[in-house]
Amino acid sequence: MKGPQAWRGRVLSVAHGHALVRCAERDLSVPADPSWRPGDLVACEDGHAVVVRRFPGGDYPTPSHEVARVPRARLRNLAARSQAATALRHYFAGQAFLEVETPSWVRSPGLEVALDPVPADGGWLITSPEFQMKRLLAAGFERIFQVCRCFRNEELGPHHQREFTMVEWYRGWQGLDAIAEDVELLVAQVCVAVHGAAVARARGRTFDVTPPWPRLSVAEVMRRFAGLEVVGDEPAEELAQRVRAAGISLPAGRLAWDEIFYTAFVERVDPALAALDHPLLVTDWPLPLAALARQRQDGAPVVERFEAYVGGIELANAFGELTDAALQAERFAGDVAERAARGKAAFGPDPRLLAALQEGLPPCAGVALGFDRLMMLATGAGDIREVIAFAGDEL
Image (cartoon, rainbow, N blue to C red; front, side, top):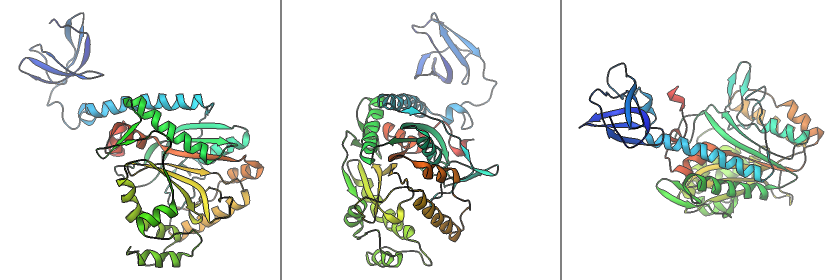
């Protein structure tokens, strides 16, 4: 059998004397030998096509076969993922960062009440590499980044998998503005690497991600989109009254400050952010949502923190890092108590992190960026499973 090209792949279908063959880069329609059957592995070298391996029999493809599980569009996204990983490492190399690796199994994961870590062999899988990366900063590193697998015991959804890829990086001796510039430049460069333009795509819309991005404080987005005044030092009861007065229903029973805030944020602000035609950095988060971020130097009840949103997708979460060991220990104690009050998994703070803070962490800022979500934006995928090789329910 003669043909003009060299190719190899798997026969997907045969009809009217032609075969559709899945090759690495694209599906080809080629003249078919009468003996070919769907599922056969075939190769064409020097213009002559031969069957390399016969499919053992039965219908092909069915939903149980890998070519059905991973359609051509998903293959393209996975190839784009490789290009994006190369682009982000090129960016960090140009900024004089060192790539580091830290363990996936730890004795103490993140304590934030919203996080549900995955237990493993008497310890936990990391929700973020933050604690260990900060210890490396204390050891003397200055600019470090990591691309790693993280784990959170949360419900599957279009933007969520229990196992996901995080890009996390820190700049010692620099502040949050430098991290914001990193996020903007990195997102733009990844989009350029994937499809040639600094444009993200989500929900059938396009977004120019050329830096710099607009910024709004949490107080501004709550006022503009939720009709709420949020300062950051009001008691939970007072915040609840304002939320109810704005027409937002709250669950009955005991509610902590963060639960009240996020009920309003999810109902009013999230849809508004999704409707924006541009990316946005949401800055200056209220003090009760500080986590590991430091309070702003002017004493306002807000912390040095931003979240990056594109097309309504929360892409990154950044802190001007708290370096006060005593204050961080106090916050951790509050997290432990609140986790107990909500019946969440119990574990103590990481003593080695607190010791590193006591030893002395340089002024620094850092960010965690969801690489899978970035790939959704770079490719226009509507579900995170379209940009990963295996979703949790495919194992």
